[in-house]
Image (tube, rainbow, N blue to C red; front, side, top):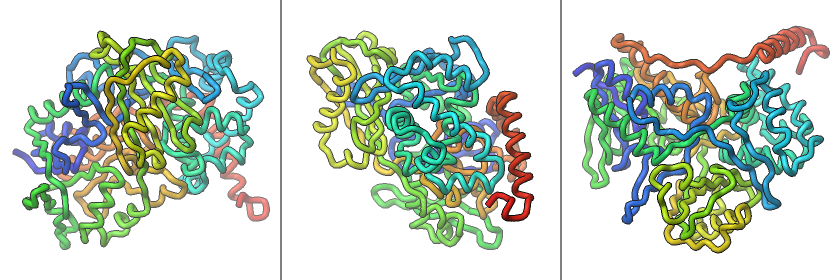
Length: 507
């Protein structure tokens, strides 16, 4: 076999490409069931559960290309509509934009959602318009991005005069389910980038589809099989405890692992890819002096994770929901909520005698101490408020999964602490949607971005070890012409103002 690369503990995209290029790839994971939040399980009764329901958005071109390359049956539904609910009832709905008349971006979204807002008056919706300037300005330079990053999304909404009604009934829940935290605790820069990528850059960007079964079984396991057929190894139950560094060369020689029983193993490597979340990386830095000695890794200790609860509930009656996917606002203070009708979305439940609902809670800190029964009771109560026909339905089975500190908290000012993909060790690279410096898509929570950073890390390995063909990465669709022109005009104006001496120049 060729040069040896370690992927820790995820990095399946990197592992796939490097294995296909003749590298000897070993993926190490402390869990006996590798895959992190992409992993799935089945209950003793054979019922599938997994870590939340994951959407696949219109701009996930690289993930869709991966599925085609794997040659598996198409695992996704068609694009679906979504409902947005408050305790007062339906707030609005998201249509399938790609099925509508096509207009320039922003105009298209306005035209096609205009009749769909049930409880937010037009005057409130129009307060969003001044905020659109921030899209033109937030990333015009590295310094500008850092300025927006230090500001909270809530501060930005106040600065541009977004109405309280629009914020509470639409923007707050959108951020709680999109970035898993309230606006007061989110970086304005990450918020803008996320809204732009998922909803505003092009009319169709908000279109979303879902996996027709367990993501683990439909997509993840075929990817694992592909890696193994290329000679890659996936080893669970191996917790990385330290990294061996060649101080003279400034490179990693390999990693030390430990099993649950305490058995120690050394894995040699020509390159190492850390594809690990914030919480896992902080644990590794705490136990590895070589990493802790480097400022870039110590900075990661400033970052935090957010709690998530995923549930699955089986009901005794077969009942339709108005929308297959739903977002909840104001049902739990400071907590984002969703529910999905899996009987409609997933093949294995289409013949189910009752109804199967998946419901997730984000930024779920205040719910974590509750019992499973109390959480399921909340799921059922929220469901009944939106779908009164479920009032007589009884829960016949349920599963509750808690994930403390599981996803990255993109808090104000966190950008400076996030790592680049290249590290101070010449053969050690980072991957994950929380790394910075990659200009591709949303600079926040994103399955597409996480996958792409794995491919980029693989390409960095190939460049460093001078073997193999780099992975092809499909670029993000370009800005539409009117947006590009506005960005260029803003860049020119701001550049002129910043060149002026004070007090005329911009502070």
